[in-house]
Structures are given as C-alpha cells and as structure tokens.
Image (tube, rainbow, N blue to C red):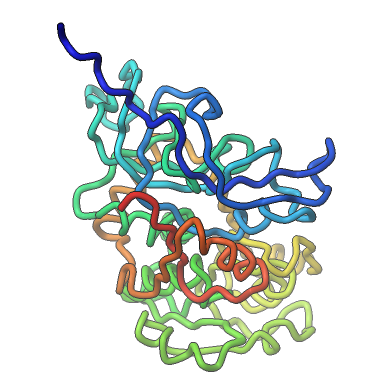
Amino acid sequence: MPHPAPPILPATFRAYVVEHAGDRLDGPVTRGVREVAEAELPPGEVTVRVAWSSVNYKDGLAAIAEGRVARVSPLIPGIDLAGEVVASTDAGADTSTDAGTDTRLRSGDSVIAHGYDLGVAHHGGFAEYARVPADWVVPLPAGLSLRDSMAIGTAGFTAAQSVAALEERGLTPDAGPVLVTGATGGLGSTAVGILAGRGYEVWAVTGKDDARSWLQTLGAVGFLTRDEVAAPGRPLEHERWAGAIDTVGAAALPYILRTLRRGAAVAACGNASGPDLATTVLPFILRGIAILGMDSAWLPIGERRALWDRLATDLRPSALGSDSTEVTLETLETALDGIVAGRARGRWLVRLGA
C-alpha cells in the first residue's frame, strides 16, 4: 500500500506570541516563545517556511501595552519575513507590471512578504511558519539571498521608496547635499547607503558620536547633531538641502522644512520622536517645498515587486548586511525593547529556519 504523504507543516511549531489583556488591546501584555498549531494560522493562499525576519520599530510597539499598534490578540508580530513556499493555492492572477508574466507562487519558491496587515492584524514573521494572501507576496529577486532581503526588510524598502520618490520629483546627485535623520537606525542607515551608492553628498543626523565612523563607511560625508536639528529657529533659514529623508518626525521635520532649498522635497517616513508637526506655511508658499509621505505598508503589489527588483540592482544598499545583528526567537525580546528605546544601530535580523 502507498504511504500517505507527510504533512506539509509539523503539528506545532515555535513562534513569539504577544497577548494583550483587555478588549482595548492596551492592557498588560504577556509575551514569549510558545508552540503554535497550524490551525492558529490565519487564512491565506501561501504558506511559508520562514527563514528570516527582522525587527522594526512597529514590531517593538506591537509588543508593549502602550504601543497601540496591535489590532488582534494574541498576535505573532513581525511585519516582514523571507522564506520558502511550502504550500500554495495561488490561482496565478497577473499582478506583475509586465502583462503576460506568470506570477503564480509554487512550492519551493523563495519569497518575501511585508506590509499590509502583517504583524499587526495578521500573524507575522516571528514564527517558523506563516500563512499570507498571495497578493502580499514578492518573489525573491535574483541577486538577493533570503538573509539579504531581511537585511533590507521593511526599513530598507521604505528607504528605497523614499529615494525613488525624491528622484521622481527631480532630485539628482548634482543638485546638492541630501540630509538623512535618524541615520543610525535601520531605515536611516540604509538610506545613507543607497544615496551614497548613487553619488549623492549625504549628511547624517545622529546623537551618537561613536557611530560617525561607521556612517562614513556607508557613505556619509557630513554630520549634524540631534540638538542642532531640534533647536528652535526662524520660519525660514538659509537654504541648505537639495532633499531630505526624515525618519524622526516632530524633533527634526520642522528644521528640514525651513532649510530645504527652493523647490526641494523631504520624504517623511517615520515619527520616532512623535507625530506632531510645529511649522508655518512659509516654506510651502515662499519656497515651493514639498513633503512626500511614504506609506510602504500599503504600496500596491505591482509597484512593490518592481521596487524590490531595483533593491537587487540600482537601489541596492552599500555594504548590505554588514550592519546587521542576528537574534533568535529566544533572544528577540532584547531587540524589541532596544528598538523602542532608541538603541538600534543598523538592523536586527531574526534567524528562524536558515
């Protein structure tokens, strides 16, 4: 008699689970590694054996009571993941940018998933297995390993989206210096590397003097301190920056707006210091500057796949992965707490099945 096919997934597998007490998801949390059954995975056409994930600021917020990010409980955080498809019922609807391209996902394919509701309202990447909708999935581009893709991760993807948006608006390397705030974080450091690799004069804002030599290896040529950027100033100051990428928000964006050159833009992609914005209309109506909002979570899948192809080629960060620290599910808590406390330097990668 033929032997029955082995199960696709083990009966249980390990995951890092956060559970909030109370219906409002703002009560005390219990969190840690536990065994999860396949039945606990959410619906989706693609089941992935996760090899790598990464730690993002949103993951840290999802793991604390006051984070106000998690929308379900219990939740497996992890807003990005990379691994191998173990089962797929993807019907193969053409979601690529090139008509006629076969985009069906098959067992054995190496893939990336991030954004949408992953790790917020849908179990995410901090587990040995994940199940997601097919239209959240990006085939791993040639030239990137699974580890590379998470060394980029959501933070690096948002950095690339920011650079692409600034260039679409007209920014070029000969236009002048570009400022990056929060430069030691995952998003900021990747932005420095991408911009420098494309020939820009990159200035970095950091409060960590001991990180300057490292940022220079990524391509930064000048520095401002946090205090310089956070200091109050006139509504308009000397025109200095041809463009900027801001990951900080309240403490940095007002300075950027009053010092951008005429017609320049800032890609706003973070609020690590808070969401408030204290400014005037003068930079907008007297210099024609612009704020470009970066929403990487809900970027349509066709544009998402095209940008990942560029991350493997012309937008590939310099020194990819050299600034990464690896953790496991058992040591993940240190990274989650560290990123919320502002102790990030580069990227924390979560090794699962690699």
